[in-house]
Length: 421
Image (cartoon, rainbow, N blue to C red; front, top):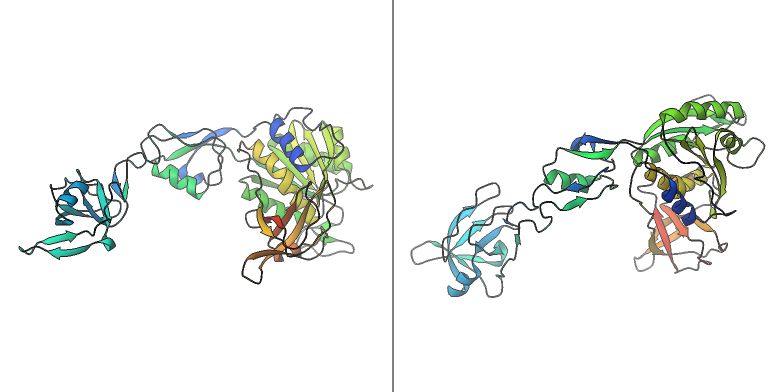
């Protein structure tokens, strides 16, 4: 299915920084998702395969931005701020000509009357009557300014301008923009097909009877949801036993029909951890040691040219490794532009001794300090198996490799769980 080149994983370092690993993957991985066209209603979450060019100017014609009154600035000055009110135009109606020396009632979205160069908001003026009983618009000094409250043709995008680049992921704002251009279908990449499995002799499917030393598999539901948020089409391969033959069979069966294979568990160096060994037997592979906590161990390989990623088995470690490494790799395969994580600077409400040279992700809650400002508080323990810290916490405090110890009041990076989990 995929055409990932051999030698992809040679890093030249015993321990990789996260940024190094991401840069390596984004530079070496090819785009493997084919282009296609889809109706606008099916485009949410998809990735553009080609740029979108405006087939018409946006706005398409000069129009009014507020409910108010249109006029010529010069005629208003000549009339001493009083103009007879003649005519009315609303959105969707043809633009009439403005009678010389008059004002016209206009509603939001209406075409700008021919000859008008100024629109004043209705709340900034008042209506009077003339000696003949006809309505007169009274405009206070300084209220009317030429081109105010007017949206000019093409001021947002000129006809032929690029409005969206290839690689952009389509969200609600992009859908609105494309729809405003009258486009009924757009060029996108096919959904990345990802095969997902968990490995572990102790794992059980939720709902199955418990057995001694057994535990329910929580990684697959979590990772499937995270993959879905990336727009991937997920094939659930279930639980695979920690046995080389079973792992080999699943990987070889999954690779031909998928763009990537993602597993969790079995990537450490224990006697029952076979993912690294099996990947090495099937093709080009590498066991990466990442300078981060949690999620230090990671296995990558090629199975029949298809990228395979092995994440740690502990849930929090699997989640963090997915966010930091699998996410950018899969987005690259899917043809997306790089989407780096951008933690928000928030003051710490705690102190923490940090190991130099290692990226650390601490689970935190977002609270308020004494004056109502945001502050981060540590949540729970550092255990990478504590799932409650993901449901009751608000996100991760990301401490980069070069960061030192944290003292209360220091600004640290906050990465909210919303949008990630």
